[in-house]
Length: 240
Image (cartoon, rainbow, N blue to C red; front, side, top):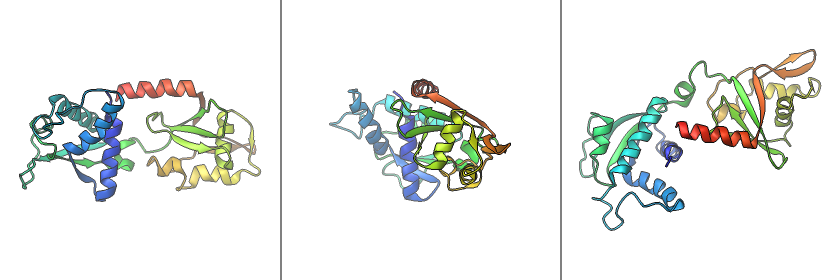
């Protein structure tokens, strides 16, 4: 069972509430989120409903450790320390494995530091190198876009809006004249409020350029089918 995306969503929600990069999450909060997925798949819960404080399944703790290690390897978070319920003094970090494996109460808390997305999760120069446009099966206006092969966090766009329609046409390798489309070119190259920057943390990138009064890609822009998107996304899920 893959819980990594559920855990990341929980972390981001906690950080927004706390307005701090260091957050505390109880085992109960993690169990609540993951249990909803277990129920959806008709799997056995991690802990005894009759005695949730003392009968935490060791597999639950091992899965938490596994997810944290994966996110640490990706430089998304850093494990800081744990705090056991009933002890008011925060414990110093000793070992991710030994600390978490020894927890016994759903009210025990794990403290994590969430890395700054703009500085750590993207790597390199934080520039966009490839945009993948997903052609919708229903041929409607709403379509997905994938930035730098991050198939777990696709964005959505609408062809009704001229700028996104322009991007879709370019992905289809259509000839797009500069005349009448200068605003759309600027929207991708220099508008910091464009969702490809605000929702990913990437720095402004020269996505498009002009050759002979025609707008063409300055980076790789590809068009794939919905089927190919699903295959690539499933592969990314298995690698997390």
